[in-house]
Length: 234
Image 1 (cartoon, rainbow, N blue to C red):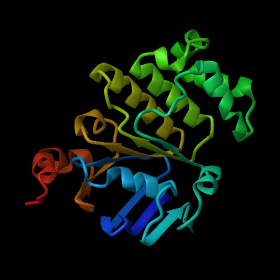
Image 2 (cartoon, rainbow, N blue to C red):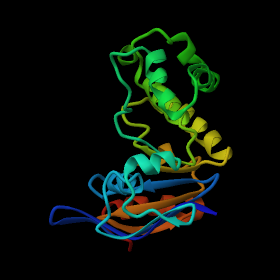
Image 3 (spheres, rainbow, N blue to C red):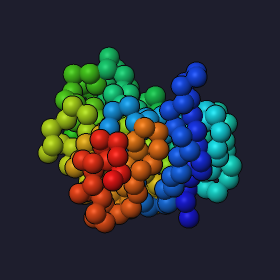
Image 4 (tube, one colour):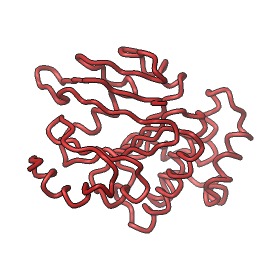
């Protein structure tokens, strides 16, 4: 079953149309990588899926239900979690206080910390440390831990690898794959395909607001990426 689906979605900023009829679906337990060059509209796809940016036309479905135009808070309550580019943690607060803020989800502090510290043990060691003084990888772990506190059905990740060493990125994506195995639908936006294709079940390449190619990462897609990133599918 597709937990998240965009059907013929168009989106614009003022008079400038950014998405030109995007069709994209993510099933439970699946990792879908959305690839493409800078300016292709990848982040706009995530914002539209999270309700942050309303589509100008088309349909957004969550668990088969039409939620087009729903407010971000309503989609969040329904299980959509967006972790934006830049990690989205509060740098001046400690790791523990960053997690404490997630008690608005209805879960208690102890449960949230147990989820976070069991998946990312390093965060337990950094519990009293200001989030902004941790490494980039540790901050990204904290962002993921905060997202998991919402018990998401759909997880939207924007440029998880940005500014991180390849070894750290590999470990983070191992965690993302494990999250998906627990039944979460994961949509990952990445500019650097190599970072995510190793765990992706499906991949789609967005060029100038249109899906130019989709399929399994090993189905010839890797070889075509350079051409697709140049804006041509031939």
